[in-house]
Length: 249
Image (cartoon, rainbow, N blue to C red):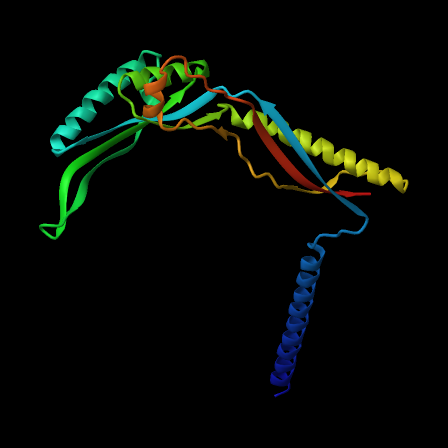
């Protein structure tokens, strides 16, 4: 009987010790979580922005044909023939097949309301075929527009100038942003006689936009007036990077 009492007492002691250990572990976990929070004591928070201006080295442009005929097949044939001529002219500028992609092809019916019949009737069909061209020699943009228009293109829109190596310029802008943030932080620290430490926290806040967009609309009307030496201004691109930096002192 004494042995049984001793065993029960020992088991009870182990349970109590285990509970104490578990309680202690829970308390340690809470402390670790608390320590994981940002300690903003003795910190300076500044922002910096870097802007790199570059000349574009690549262009994108949409070129296409819209044809209308009473018969759907006739509209398709006319469209196809014009697109073949346009593609031949475009490829004469050494544009590769990989740099030409179809972004729209559709056939739609044209309808008018017939008062005598009291309903809408089909009067013809319209075919639209548009491709996006990547132009790597941007000096040829205006020339390609003229040659495509002369070959029958009546849809020329969305000229978009950009840079091919986007990452390089963005990283340069990011370095500039960090340097400006450091200079701000140093200036603030100097005013009350402390030395700026290493960055405690850095947040990249950039809203990246590498390209500018120009426009070339209503090409068909323009061509009736003058189809020679179309001039396209590429301008400059601005690549921006912004950071928010917390320094310790």
